[in-house]
Amino acid sequence: MAIVATTKRQYGLGIWALALGYFISYTPYSGLSKAVTSGLLTGGRSIPGTVILPAAAISTALAVLLFITVKGWWKYGRKRWVLGLNLPFPRVQAFVSGIGFATIILTTTLAYSFSGVSIILALVLMRSGVLTMSPVIDWVFQRRVRWFSWAGLILSLTAILISLSNVQGYHLSLAALLNLGAYLAGHTMRIPSMTKIAKTGDREVAFNYFVEEQVVAMPAIVLALAVLAFLGPGDLAGQLRFGFAHLFDSSFAPFGWAIGLCYAALGIFLSFLYLDRRENTFCMPLFACSSLLAGIAASYLLVWLARAPAPNGVQLSAAILLIAALLVMSPLHHMPLYIKQLREAIAENRLKIVTLVGSEAGAVANISQPVAASFITINFNPVREVVRKRSPNLR
Image (cartoon, rainbow, N blue to C red; front, side, top):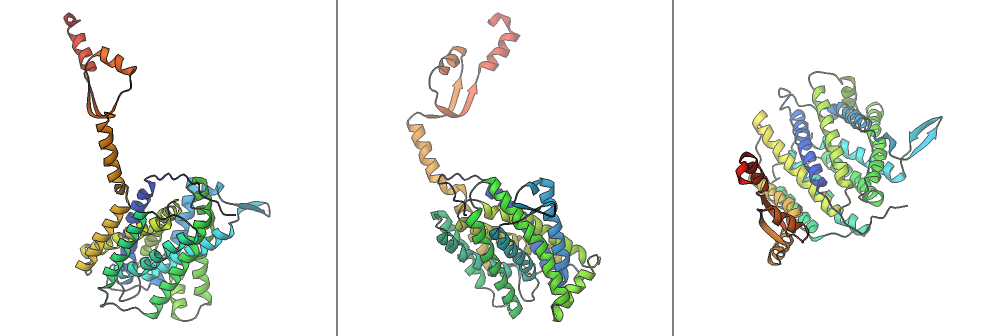
């Protein structure tokens, strides 16, 4: 049975802290993924994305499960007794979402490994599909979409179109297109499931859902790679087997482990960003803006550290639009209302900019009368007391 959110809307600023954490985590993740698979950090030797996937997947799974353990969150989530053990037993929606999240994890890392695909292009292709599905999901679940969410969505999609106008120098292989399709399929599994039962604003509901989803997703990313490695045909399976056999190879494995740790961090931030009770048409553009700005930051880091090609003016123009989208969606969109309320308060003498308290009698009198709020209160009474103690003759 779906849990219906209450009609009273209360939004905090925590989602912006999650977006910042996601940006900080995604910058090294995307930069490392591209640098390793293109040979920028391995002496010119390009490492296939499928080779580093086993180390990255195991690292992500261990880090997320350790995070849940340290936080003491195993008490959350539905459980059943099996052979005398009280084991997690995810709901159907959480199970589907977990499989979708596992698909997203694997395809995201692979997206940066294809030749001829830059960090920016990979991000643009992935985020464009996610952005377009967000209002559709809100419509299906009859969630109200506020004007600034639409504005953020439009600005984000415009930035993506601008970025796409400068991709003539790139080419997309069939494998890259199939990977993109799998990535978007993962979101069509995850976001509707999450919206149906978990986007309520209730912290306990969010924790329950997060634990149930991760219990499915984390083992799934490792098991899926293991099955493909040992049962799959062709070069893909061979590269995965090589990755599993060389999990501690000093020439490339540490990069895989680091990529996995970064994804664990960004995955946690992103999960709770998605679980915020706001409409998907707000959460998705916020996620897209954060990741695209992180991709641009990662590109400049690679320019500085590894002499990679620099982002061009078109990509910077897109970044400016993304910043504008973030500003529109931020609490700054309430600024006209705040200014109006401030003017009314000053006009009605309900607010004073500066209040001077100069005598004890006045201070006592003010206690029994309604006092206008003030930004600055200057109280001279403590100074008067110090002077009196030092100069008894003034008493």
